[in-house]
Length: 324
Image 1 (cartoon, rainbow, N blue to C red):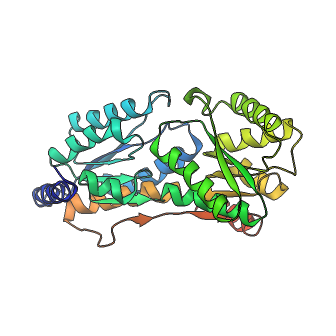
Image 2: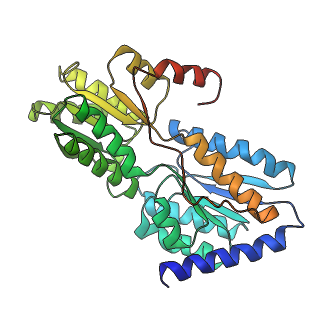
Image 3: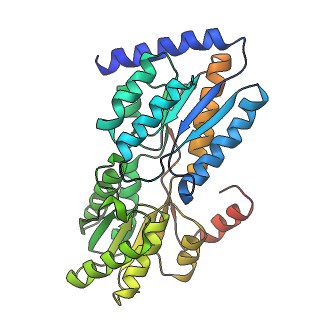
């Protein structure tokens, strides 16, 4: 089935579901995401649950399904999608992390007539290919590009992207974007690829970064793919005695990342606004299932935004207010 026919089939099936459900005013929405103890995904989960308060007030629900770890990400996520179908989901939200493993499961969602929104990873291309209603999130390549461009414009010439989830399409896109952004600003980029077991393992990442910098003294910029890995990369840079000469930018942020930027040990963070991803995706599906409401804008972008010394205080104020 080609992209256009699958998209048309998905939208028609979803419209039929919406007409049937419009008198029920209750949508049981399943959201596939990351580990709930992952700092970034905890914000996505909060956004989904906050939007879910409306669904619950209408008699519906929001159920979060996440993997225990990221060691077998694609197959595990595909299994979670199939669980959502088996448990009678009225609508499903999911990231297209590893297309070759996850696409068949997403296609089963559409074939079952269940409205689908792709979020966080995959972009509008994945949404169209799979027959989903929409994509909500940042464009992974553009997020990485923003980091590379920022460091390149700051005068850095040789960068490395620390990839701790090899094979994940969104992470590969982060690194490709970073390298291209750095090269567009006159530098050159490479990838430090680590096994997936290193993701979230601060010691493993820091040691790998330290060793890589000592073996490649020309590197003066690094990019990390998430909060924990960014902190570990900063630590590895310091352990290599490169603090102040190797600058780092990373995806997402938490309190320690903001403190790094305030202290000058981190140049920037790329914000994709995870809370908005969960909130918008659930809201779109809840309104569609209950009322047949559609959003005419296809591809709802939540990033990238650059956080650096110029705006970090404003971001901290937003965090304290509960809005970031």
